[in-house]
Image (tube, rainbow, N blue to C red; front, top):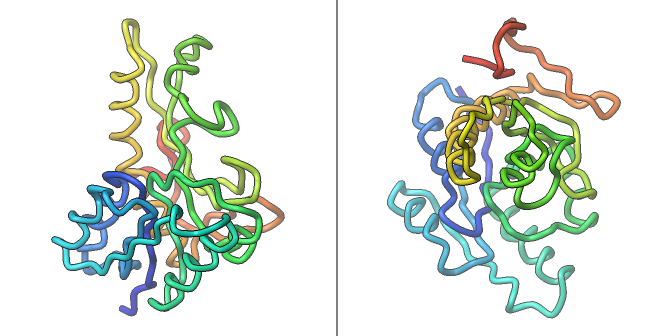
Length: 216
């Protein structure tokens, strides 16, 4: 089976990148990670990727005069590896419309909330402050607006009495590590196509009683 080549962009430890790397070890997984790139030369995730035998690149945003120059270098680097999809995994740079439109419907992000709720930072603190009973994460195709775009999948977790932001974050992160590989697999196999700014899934049946969609 020919696998779809993907690049993963990180700024730190890249725990979701690590989840993708582990998933991609399966022979029937439809994606192959050919590049892990970072804007941060000290990102711990680079060492993990190198140990896994994956090519790494550093495009330090501080070396460029403006966002356009940085993103042009990033775009050129990604294309050297003939990648089809780009996955954001804790990439802490806001991408401009130039980049997001260049990779329209090929750029995937995971966000630690049930979008469209709690866009931006500090999602777990805000969820607790709002008193929500269900929290979670969302995988979506990226659009120029922050944390916006057609949703591929979401995973929900309960908010429990006594939760702190850190405890809730750990619960959500566990769900992220399950959801992201599933959604990337759907995208790379052509089963999560955008139609009218919504994702049409061509996959196995989803159980309405389950909190994760897609689910195992």
